[in-house]
Image 1 (cartoon, rainbow, N blue to C red):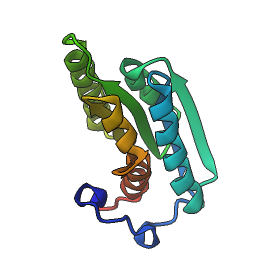
Image 2 (image 1 turned 30 degrees about the vertical axis):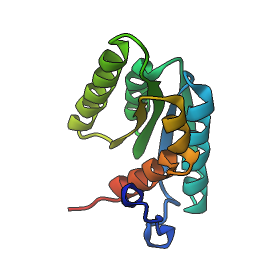
Image 3 (image 1 turned 180 degrees about the vertical axis):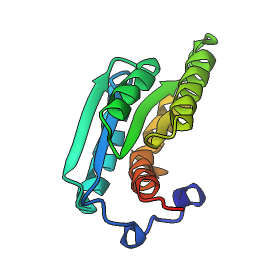
Image 4 (image 1 turned 180 degrees about the horizontal axis):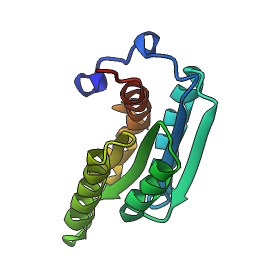
Length: 155
């Protein structure tokens, strides 16, 4: 998204989400971070007139894939997966990040509904804070914009 270059998003060019059904699947692990991501995503969806927003809470990032699959089976127009995985002292970080990324990729390959990867994979808590409403913006906002754009994608 544009904020990767530290350029503010122009929400005026984002299509309306008035008729869309959007599910947001939120990991409860690292709740301070994921709640900020959710608040950013929800604010954009509401600003773009989306009134059908479903929140699904799951225990951790590995469970995001199952929550997204449930939303996909319920025919949501787009699904946003929000999580935060912070590196520790063991290889667990690598396993979780890869499993979640591949799981969401596999859901997208089904082609039923776009699933947006809004999972932060940071080395430190301060990096996660910077990307969830801090100095580097809020990746939840970017995920919501991507969800709207993908739900409206026409070829």
